[in-house]
Image (cartoon, rainbow, N blue to C red; front, side, top):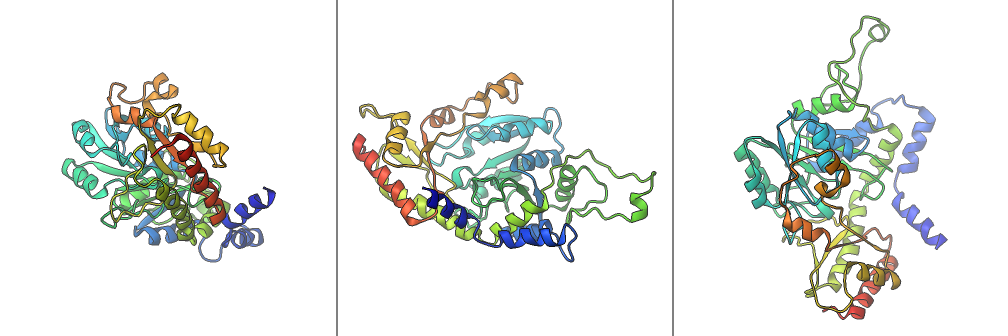
Length: 398
């Protein structure tokens, strides 16, 4: 087991991470050319075909800053899928808006287009599309709806690194703003961190200011605070024209993220290989149904989401399936997050429209089995596939 852990650690950081960190140790934070943050932003923009990328310390911060940039007012509403982590709702609230919870599609597990149409009102200002589990929302339809009603489209791409929809549109490049995560479990990681993407110079400038204390000299292209020595040492110099936050990514994190970004296809391909191996076992199974991925969609399978449908099989339920899977050597199975408006904190502070009905999301949340896809090699993948086969045979699920 010890050797296996060492191997996992090695493959996860097998690029230029150590080299880039050592550059900082040798030179400090004074760079001859571009900082690691700037290099990461340029690399990420090229990778996702966007004009502006802004490094930040987490995807939660990215969401907060994105909604601050929209300048939400007290009664402004943002449509958000109910079946998604809590920060997708609280970030709207903290930026001054009101989250409106939207149901999800029972097959794709993603925000439901038809329910979006039903819940658009005169107060609606934006739609948050969350690309859950590595799947991709229908970006073409979402963009069309947002254009029709003059709404902002924000994409949460935390789990969909370099994913593409059936029209070959890459996540984070279609909406007005894309929000990304480099948290430790994600396809690309620097321990913790994130990035914002946009093609809008005005939004880019606002997001830089909100994420970097509100310095007035910041612009859309750079986080550099360029002031003269005389300005810095002048007691009359006024630095800030916005109220911002210290959400900046540090250079060590940026160095690691840059190295990871250089190998992102390698990391995503590993996840896809693991997920597709499990999906192959689930073919034609009427009780275990994987997340529906449209033809020509490139899912990055942050996790493999599988719906355990209602059945009459003796002693088979979510908990018994997970227990038996682990007994047979499986890594474990995660549950989907509780619906945003089910969380105690959201109820306590009455965040969002609590009366919104999301029956599909409510049912689906208790059905989803989230299988890990972060195995480092074929041998580890084989352990998971064998455990799944044995579990299916044990319960005689066909």
